[in-house]
Image (cartoon, rainbow, N blue to C red; front, side, top):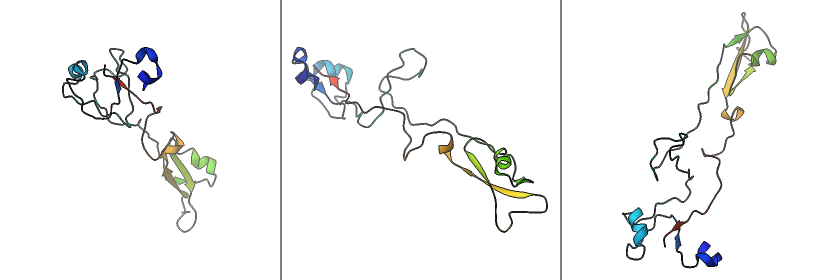
Amino acid sequence: MPNIVMDEWSDMVFLKPNGASFSAVEYPKLAKVWTGLVIPEMRGEFLRIWDDGRGVDSGRALLSAQGDAMREISGRLFGVMTTSTSQSTTDAWVDGPFKATIASGAGAATTTGYRYDADFKVSRVVSTASEFRTRNIAFNFLVRAK
């Protein structure tokens, strides 16, 4: 805690925002901010600095939660037949997260052209992980109580 490291802060008390309750008698000023006498649970959450009129995240109230989101990812598949067996020609028929591959085996070729298959992988256009998340830094956030 900073009050242990910095001598000039030795009379201050800091609490972790871990959902714990606190005493209004022991921390009367904090009780004016959090009248329910519970420090918000913020462990594992991405903290976003309040917009305060800047316009980047307007309309948000202090301590309001916001669900996760991801940008729209889209791609187009322009057709399913080609007269070329060239992979570069086939690639011209898709974009974004799609990848086209000339089909092979039974049913791959017809009298009018070649079938190609397309698959969709978000990782072709954005970084992926086992979870949705914002870029962040793990930071131990404290609340000054006294």
